[in-house]
Amino acid sequence: MGRYGTDLSEWIAHPVGEQLEVEEWSAVAETFAGRVHVEWDTTAPVTPLGQLPFFIEYLKQGGLFDGWVADCPLLFTSPNAPRKRDVLGTLLLSVLAGHRRYAHVTALRCDAVNPPLLGMSKVVSEDALRRGLAKIDETAGVQWVQAHLDYCVRPLLDEPWVLDVDATIKPLYGHQEGAVVGYNPRKPGRPSHCYHTYMLSDLRLVLRVEVYPGDQHNPKHAAAGLWSLLAQLGRQHWPSLLRGDPEWGNEGVMVRAEREGLPYLFRLRATANVKRALERARWRSATGAMPARAGKARKQTYG
Image (cartoon, one colour):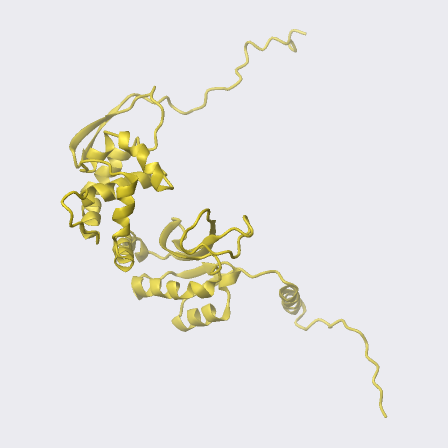
C-alpha cells in the first residue's frame, strides 16, 4: 500500500504553468495632457480602460483624433453649449468602455483620469451627447465617419484581400426607427434591424455597415451598397474575391460580378436538385457518360 496510499499532500492540484510572473514596471505615454507615467499595479483589478493612455498616444501621434474632431459636421451656436471635443470624446470613451445605451455614459462622469488625456475639459451628460449627435446631418455624418474609416484601412487594401458580405439580425426592444417585424430566427415576431456588413476577411475588419429595417434582409436591398463601396474604393483596391452566403448567389449579383470581372464564391444550399446535379457531375467525371434516369415505364396506346 506504500505506492498506492491515499496521502495526496505531495500532489499539486493545479501545477504552475510556464507563464512568467508579471513584474512591476512603468512606461511613458505622450497624451494630449502631456507626458504621463503609467505604472503596473499587480494588486489592482483589471479595468477596460487600463491601456487607454497608450491608445491615446497612438491617436495623438497619428493625428487621428484631432482630425476626426475637426472634420465633424457638428456646430453649436449657443455660448453655453459644450465643446465639440468634449461631446465626441465622451462618445469615444463610452464606445471603448463597451457601453450600449446613452444611459451608460453616466458611469464615465466619475473618471477624472482619462478625459484629460484626450484633451477634454469634462464628460458631458447623456442628454447633451444625444442632443449633440442629433444635430449632425445624416448624410454629412455618414460621409464624415466613412472618410476617416477609409483613411485608416485604405493602405491595407494594396495587398490581395477577400471581401465578406453578411447580414446580421438585431432584435429591438421599445420604439425605434426602422423596427419592423421580419426574418428573426432567434426572436420570431420581434421587431428588428438588419445590419448588412462588408468586412475585410483575414482581419475581420469592418469596411462598412448599412442598417435596414428588419424585413429588408435580402441581399437585393444591399446590392446597391456593395457596388457603391467598391466604386468608392477604386478599381485598384478591389478585392481578389467576393464571398457570401447562399442568399448572395442570386442572378443579379452574379451577373454584375461577372460583368465587372470580380471573382465570387457563394455558398450553395444542398437542395434535392443540387444533389442530383452533383451526382450526375460525379458520374460523368468517373465514367464519361450520363447516368440512366430512373422513372416509371409508360404504356403507349395507338389507335
